[in-house]
Length: 490
Image 1 (spheres, rainbow, N blue to C red):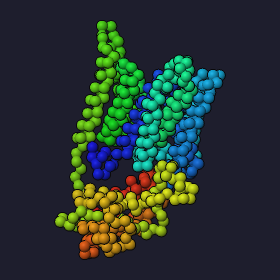
Image 2: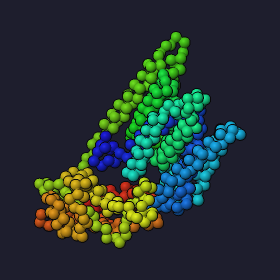
Image 3: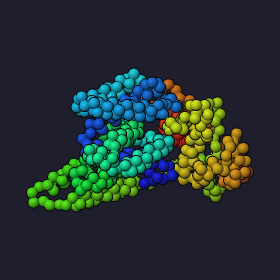
C-alpha cells in the first residue's frame, strides 16, 4: 500500500484514475448491454482515440516541454460527441440498420487514428501507450478533472435513473405519464459520451470498451434485478481495476489490458456458474447467485490487498556524500532558484485552468520545474532515511526564493526553521532533439543557525528522456537520476 498512498504517492493517481473509469463505465455499461448497443461501446472509444491522434497532428506534438494535452482532451471530446451525434441522428432517420453506421464509424476511426499517427510520428509513443491502456502518467490535474466528471456523471445518473429506465425499456409508458423519453436518452448518451471521452484520454479505448462490456455481462449472468446488476458490475469493475493494477505491477505488464483480462475471468467464471445453476436438478435462488458474485469480489479484493501487502519494504538508499545529520533536526528544502532565464512553466492538463492564460489574464500561481524539483528533493532525502520537515511545511515557512545558500539560511531562520536547509540553483534545463535532457543543478546544504555550508553537490550532464512527451513526464523520468547523481557522486 506504500506504493499507492505512502509519502511518495507513486501510483496514487493511476490507481484512483483507473478506479473512476472502471466504476463509471461498468455502471453505464449495464444499460449499454441491455439496450443491445455493445457495438456503440466499440466505435465511440475508437473515435475518441482518433480525436486525440488528430489533436497531436494539428499541434505537431513532439518530445519537448509543454505538449498538447489540453488539445488532446478537447479532440477526444469533440470526436466522441460528434460521432455519437451522427449515430443518433442516423438511427432516428431509420433509413438503415444502426449496426451499419456503427461499423462504418469503427472502420473510419481506426484508420484515421493510424493515419494521424503516421502523419505525425513524433506523437506515436503517447498514442501507443494510450492504445495499450497505460495509466501510469495520470497527472494531478487529470485526476481532479476525472474525479469531478465522475462525481457529476454518477449524480446525474442516479438522480434521473427512473427516467432513463423508462426511456430505455418502455418509451410509450413514459410518454403516457408525461415523461419525455428523448430527453432521458439524450442524458444517457451524454453521460456515455463524456465517460468515454475522458476514459479514452486517461486509460485508452481498450480499457474503456472492456469495462463498458465485461463487468455488466458478468453481473447480468447472476443478478436478480437491475439494481443488483449495477451494484455487482460496479464491484467487479472496482476489483478488476485494483487487482489488474496489482498484477500488472508484479508481472511488469500494461495495466489496462491486465485489468480487462481480469474482468474477462470474472465473466467466464460467472457464466459457468450461471450455466451450472440452469442444469436440471440444480436450484439456486437469484439472491444466492448475486451473493456468490459479491463473495467473489470480496475474495478478489482481499487477494489484491495481500498482494500489495506482501511488497517488501525497500531499504533506504545510500546517502552517498551527504553528511551525517543526526541530532541536527529535520532538513527543510528551500525554494529552488531558476537561473536558466526561461520560465520553465509546467502546463496544467485541465483546460479550465489554462483558459485565463489563453485570454491573457494570467493563471495565478503557476507550477514550475523548480517547484517540482524542490518537491522531488524532499522525497529523495526521505528515501535516503534523512528526516525532512515536509514539502508543504517548507513552502509555508520560506515563501520567497533565495538567491544563494546564505540567503536560504536567513529565510529559514526568519521562518522559524531550526534544522539544516537544502538550497538548489537550476542553471540549465534543455531538451535536445535526440531525447536527452541537459541539466545543470547546484545544491547546497547549510546550517540555518550559523549559515555554515555543510555539503555541496551538483548534477551535470545529459539524462535520457526518450519516452517523455511533456515537461511533467520529463521530470518523472529524469528527476530521480538527477538527485542520485547530485547526492551520490564523489
